[in-house]
Image 1: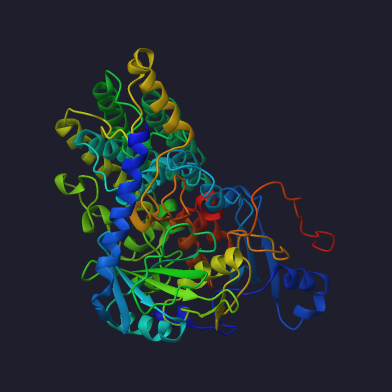
Image 2: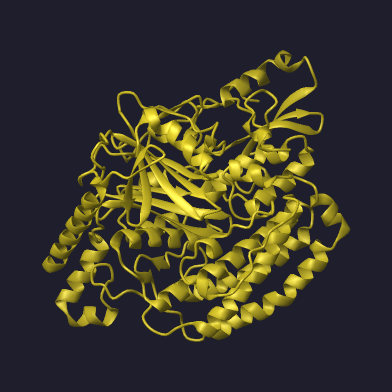
Length: 184
Length: 422
């Protein structure tokens, strides 16, 4: 078993080394830095260029937003696989786009600081982002600027806290019930 | 109608963007809505036609739905948070409980993503077993849709017929995986067990039974004037709207947009089997019904080819890192026992990185996004549930329709609430 563990650690180190090597060639697309993650195209943007990049991607034929989610890197143990020039922040909003005509996909990763977790909404570019952005707001407390209905979606409206943040404990929490007295 | 309708933000949009607290206020003070005939109506979460616990807030004028809002979360149990506590080996037991009508697809998407991070390739037989099980699962899932769709629209007999055929498939699943649902059968590295003796005969029997019964469905529903009248022209969506709202699966295909990951981004061995991607013309409830009915036939076509082409060999990868030793070795060797124990207690470490893999589930694109930090549990696991995202189309489908058609629309979007709420 000991040898197995060593094998695991070696492989982990190999992979991250590969990614660091792939990073600094600084290819850009729609104004964003491009990296490769296990064969997938990843675009790294900051909040200022996010909307411009997304609009450019839409104009280039990325006709559907497939997925939008977030990651909280507060307790991340490994080195972050970000290219030079991208400042790591606590949160990352991750968007998957698809171009049906070319059969092409990209993943866009946006760095979002913990002290001001606000990102422009993609609602005006792809209205399908509405529910997904509400879910990210509900679970991570990241707000989407100009979103038509920035409210909780899975948790009760009056819930306190953001469950998928890494500092939100797992375990026994007294169940909050919505006050149901005045609903007919 | 164009995508403009979707994009509108104002009061005339299809989506009722009203908080539950504000809705309760309106309920308490009838004067707020007294200026016209508009009523705010609550439907669900416990309503026989809402497929579990979907709640709808409907703004009505007479019997016509103006705006609506699906209210979800009643089944939310924090499964994505739970996934961060479970090892990669245990992960499948968690995701399989999301879309409980097609559990094998969630297991498959999770396993493919984990394998991508691990950089392992599963043996050919495991690939074909996965394909066989998924296509049978697609059949059982669509048969369940036939049953509930019939029931929702008053063809109560159909409920029994759909479940009767689905039961045959579930019986086969029980034979292979030990369980009728929540199988935990497809795992990173392959599948949990090889197919049992006599599986070919059992699969052939299912195909033989199902074939003529689909003809009976045609008589009962497809060609029947009442059925057509009830579904045709109801809940219409066009391709631009479906793309804009991130809809996938039969919902997108019903608009005439041919997109199926099995054909367009082949995974497993879908590029080695022959099947057709079915599309609709009008994007209405009838098209969605017809697509699902005929997708059962396409799945049967694929299953027949798998019966012929099933390769022999190993059903899981022989990589000591992810695969426990065979049962007999545990009795003979202390090292094998320790190896087994370590895999099932600590799990295996997955290299740091991020990956996304998607499969075509019966409801659309089911994707799993995993971020690993090199430990034996996912740092973050996100599931792109097609039911959750397809639900966004519901207000647009219902707009300006009758409330009685709303039942047909909920049914034809076919949301599985376990996957919506996760």
